[in-house]
Length: 324
Image (cartoon, rainbow, N blue to C red; front, side, top):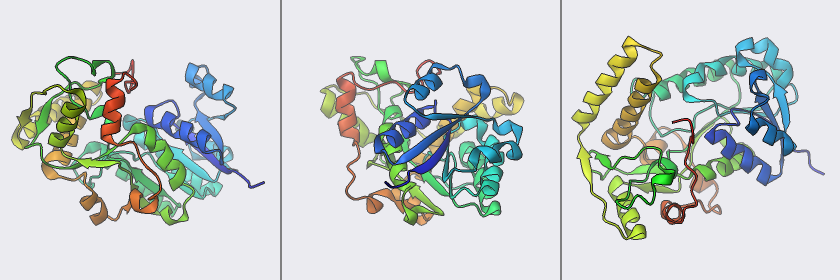
């Protein structure tokens, strides 16, 4: 019997983390261990993982690398799906993984394609972690997934999609014609399960996607599937930058203002995706990403149109329920 690949995952109770855990369980070829802080042991989600037979390892990145090394000694792959505001807590994880002899480290990427250097603060926070990985010469794979279907669809006049909507917004950045890469959240984990077993992806960036669609095409699909007409509003690049400046000033005034930081992230995402045109397959290949469809041509991802039909059938869960 083949030995299962040992995987330690941090952030299992988040949206991306749950998708990854579910996919690893379904795959069946992984020995899954979850890194959980002591304060989180009684959380219902953690208890549910225990019922599923997953091993819980108690640890906290805040305790430093030396405390984490024993937790990683028998681990082949470490995956981090930590939240956007906690990226720097991965630094001791990187150091510990190097000391423990981890064979592959998957940092918390899982965002849109975007070069570093002042375009998106979320991307730049992740870059700090990537550079720590490279300084340590730690084997890695960085996986970006475009934007989820679950946070991409517009509101319908009937309100039929409101139950699953995190950000009700029908305003298109730019002229609505810039393409953007999309991935269904449920497929993120399936891609991860394949990628971390694949030697071709070691020390590489990989981009996942099901579709590359413009906002106008997304609206067209929603109109086709729903039979409803959706009002289309447009926002110029200058208007986005003005909103971004206001949010940035609020964050400068109060760095702990999570609401303003969230707004800042939204405006940066919109400017990067739809004004700069960063989140495209062309840009991904320019930056050196491997194309997941070329790696795994047999896999059929959930397309945005298929997602839209499920959405109208009431089958889609709202992301971050109870958090935003």
